[in-house]
Amino acid sequence: MKVIGITGGIGSGKTTAASILAKLGAVVIDADRLGHQVLDEDREVIRALVGHFGPSILSPGGRIDRQALAGKAFGNPQETAFLNCIVHPVIRCRVEKLKQEQQLLGCKVLVIDAPLLIEAGWTDLVDDVWVITAPVEPVLRRLGKKGMSRKQVLERMQAQLADEQRRGYATETIPNDTGLAGLENRISRLFRHYACQ
Ligand code: ATP
Image (cartoon, rainbow, N blue to C red; front, side, top):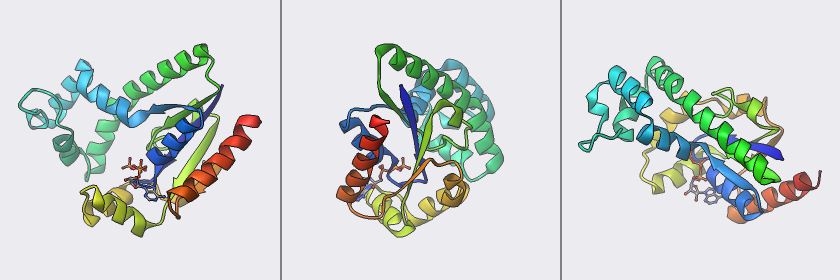
């Protein structure tokens, strides 16, 4: 089994790239979705986060309110580091388990879609790192349509690695600077080449 890690900046098109790869036959693990599951289900994680950030991160139903948590944790590097240090190891365990399962099932190409693949130190889980890059203006436009303000997006970009730093880890850098058809073409070509290796 070959394992590709997909990563990139906010709104760069990681999920879109992963879904193109899924259509081409790869199995995709979505680390963001696993992160949400961990916040919903893992009692130890919930206890540690409420202990640190306080009960205001809980919704009236007693679940973690992700927006409230983001409000507390992002914007302060120490608080972000605390959150990551509690949550990342648990997500990593889930990714490892799913990876083992796919290996046993005979999967040929596994994709791990992980925005923080590099920051979390997970590059050892993958054989190749594909970095999706996109110019700032289209990202602001696309995420604006999804309700994020310019300020929110720019702040998130500032807090993340720069594309230049990501490139240092990349086995492929995939520019997402044209329409969807352009991205599909680029990924299909790479995938065909990759799957034949
Ligand atoms: P996030 O960092 O928020 O998880 P992401 O990197 O996974 O985002 P996507 O969700 O794939 O990015 O893309 C962000 C938005 O931009 C989506 O609405 C998607 O449909 C759109 N998009 C991505 N690539 C293109 C493209 N080449 N042309 C037009 N729209 C695109």
